[in-house]
Length: 284
Image (cartoon, rainbow, N blue to C red; front, top):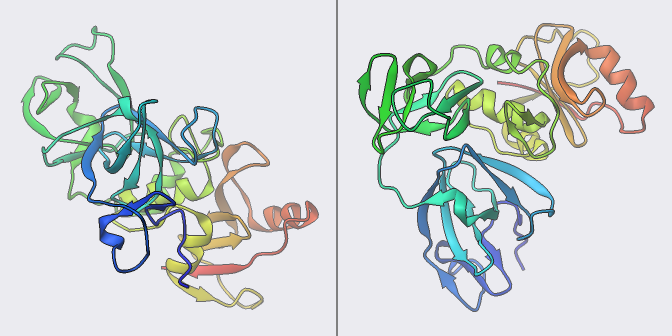
């Protein structure tokens, strides 16, 4: 019997995505409905309860394939971008056929109901959020729904940052938040995924997935190895980004912040806490 990763496989005891038919048995196969995240972000939880474990967040404009919408206000489905599966509040989603044209390129911006900064914001949107822009007025970019954002806070959807590390550096001082990937808070793998996305690179959501899929491996115990900016350092359940040969940038559960510190200091502290040694070093 094949073993599927529940995090990225849309299957439950009572149903599965239609795309899995022939790969896995289920009593019901569902084609799914394409929706987008309309709120500033949407919590994706492991179970359909507000206090269930937060696995990740979906950003404004992300595509969510909905396989079930229950009577309690929860939608079960899968994010199109990284295939993550879970439950999000149904009220955060809407049907939408508009193609995204721009993405938010600053840590956080506001979505207004009209072209005035005096209007109360409808939502706060984070770096990487997608929008469909159809017009401009003064300093504002206007979405297909008539909502407005500061035009200078956006870049065309095809724009790619030249250095993903510089994107990650913008988050220094942002709180650590398990499952998060916005400027209100994010975790170690969320930081990597968001920074990669801004640079046109692809990364799965969790650190163990990133360790398996991103870059090529370098020898961990090679004393002559010269680390470079952009190398990824992995521990069991944790990932950090090298700013240079000696300095690590990561969302740290110890500091509860995105911090920059000596790699050796991080290695010693993590080992002292019993979390183990570095498990791999990956280079793009």
